[in-house]
Amino acid sequence: MERALRLKINLDKPAMVFSKNVTPTSRVRLAAILGVKVEDRHAKYLGLLAIVGRSKKKVFDGIKDRIRIKMQG
Image (cartoon, rainbow, N blue to C red):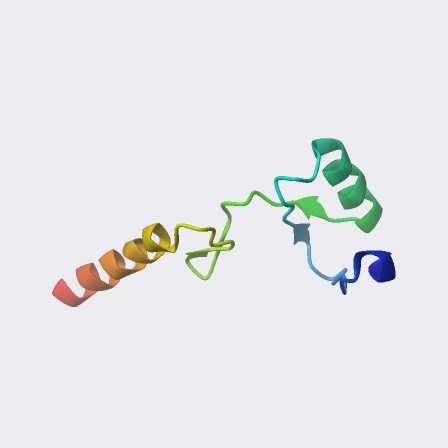
């Protein structure tokens, strides 16, 4: 499968995130085959959104606000 997808699959990873172009049926099938769960695109990793889309300003404005609050307090 790795050769067909041209990706290295980390089977130690407990979850996968799929593109919106992948059908729900394909997501469920692939997750079942690999033995992982499907993760929501809005999950966070180290306090940041796991996937930053086109609107990076929105994501990083939140970080700037948290830093500003910590510096004031």
